Image (cartoon, rainbow, N blue to C red; front, side):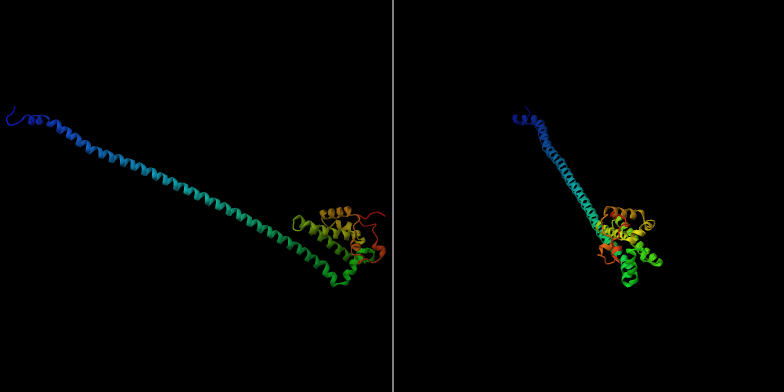
Length: 248
């Protein structure tokens, strides 16, 4: 036994290296574990932040898609609304154009027929006598009556063209066709009808002939005006030479 040392001291000296190593190991573990925990927490926090960022980015992307879809819907509705408005405008313009066309037809006929007849008694006289019989007219009056009848037929030609363009309706067209056919039913009109066919269009000729055949019992203009334009009762009742007239 060494001098000056007791047995416990000797034992302590012998175990000191072992104790020191154990203390160092414990100290090392105490120092390492917090670092590991801190590192794990950092990595976990970074992962959570990345996940949160991805969620936010996804929500932002969906929001942009929704905004884009909404803008497309609004644009489509705007286009539909524009088309509806244009359609309404076209329909309104079509009605206006139809009205203007019919008014133009009426005004033109008035200026060519009614106003001269009102202003000149001679025109009315030629008109009345010519419808009853061409024999009551001299050569010059026959030419005048021819142009009067031709004016009526050309007017019907314009009416038919407007109908083809759908500028006037069937009611107006049928009224003008009935009136024109009534002129051709008069003795004077019937006498000029074969010549007039060579001037007007075949479509108008066919329309008038078809109407006369379909309405063979229809009145002439003289009869429809209750004899106002009749010159003599015998002529007023003359129907033998009128197209479509029934045989007696």
